[in-house]
Length: 591
Image (cartoon, rainbow, N blue to C red; front, side, top):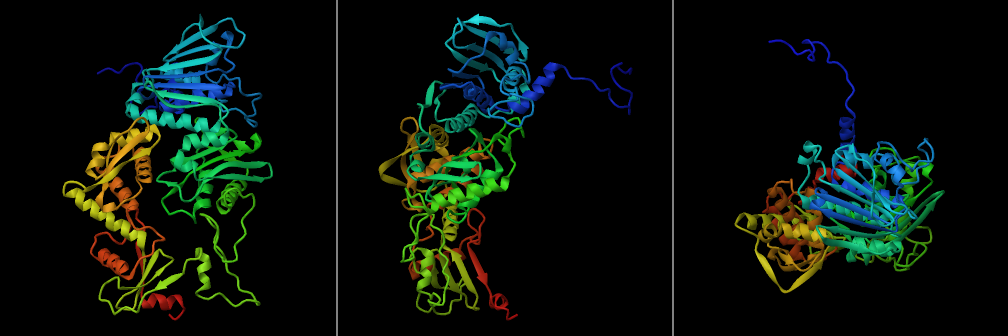
């Protein structure tokens, strides 16, 4: 068999060749435009950089079939339209140093990347121009500029996304999921630019239509009523760094970090330095595994920041990351510690009771003029709550977890086993596991038993969240949660799982929607159902801070002993700790 002249001899290196420009552009397009949401983000950023006062985004088929972004910005002159769709052509860099970047876009990659992956049409008219001009790009092929009709501003239409790169198109999710990602991108940009009116429609239905607003009104509009009612103002400065925005009280948390909006110099970001700072700021005031709700705006000199880290421009490098971290942690901490409307840190009342959720821990420092605090005074560290509530001395218990001695901090059960070991039980974590296993058993037997509500409850949600839940309505019904549509963005709850008692359905549905969004449709149904069972169990369990009687404590310990996997909660955290006599003596240096 003869070899083709183009084939190298066996064992020899293949010749090096330059790739065709069209292939290069399609490879680069995959970096910048990995899904419809990325195209939407880039086009809206261009509109904001053009000084738009109103931006309208319309999606069809999740953005896979069609994306339209219309703005009333400065427009593009006809002479520059052909240049605008060339790679690395931009009007946004005053010089080539990449040091002072003051615009959202600057790389000159968005329009050519979209044009390489889709059918792109740009109609633009600068103010004062007699008419608009149109340019089309189809799979990287640029067509001539022609006159067109159109108002001042720019209309960009991208259709049949990835038709030129079928391999990329295969990896897109279903249209509903892609639409949710695109909606999230527009929400982040709308939060970053409250001075701009935003309208988003998807398959003809209006998702939101926001007028020009101040920052507080925009945050309240997009984060939802529950979060809006609990927002605390954040304001802090450190040198030339300035932090502002809002942080929700610790009573409002989410199952995921989807409720966090982080904006740096007007740019929505997903920066690990900022995320870590937010987590640390809330670490001592919210339960592990929960996520706070914040909308934070950090402003700093452009030269203190490197935004040229990744084509998506959502990751940053700070010149002084430690200063940024300290500013965010301190700013949020100050907001959580202050009573509503206070401008200065609160003083501690003489009773020792600290004001408001998120109160700082009170350190009791004995002095010569005062005797060291005793057991009764130690309750000051717990907002006036007794440190421990002792029970009558128990009889020796043959049970592995022993007999309850006391409840500590209204959260932990202290018990003593027959061999003298001390057992400390986290009542919420333990009851969460018991509830989860009970729900699992019911589900395995054919379905979780529902408890119809006397009056159905209406829960208002973002349209995307409501859509996710309603799409899983049949699966939720098998879990004892019966819901139906009640207008756009609202869900009617007719029944809750009987094992949960009577939890507030609002937080439960919001958490379920967030977890469904994070899991995505690619996750196996069985895994999604078990995750939902775990979330139901969490909302139906005894909460930390609830006082229990002796019989309730004893019943909880006995149920733990009879329940599989009771050593950890549904999230993998331990439900109890056990200290043997030898371990206690070692702690005191006796061994």
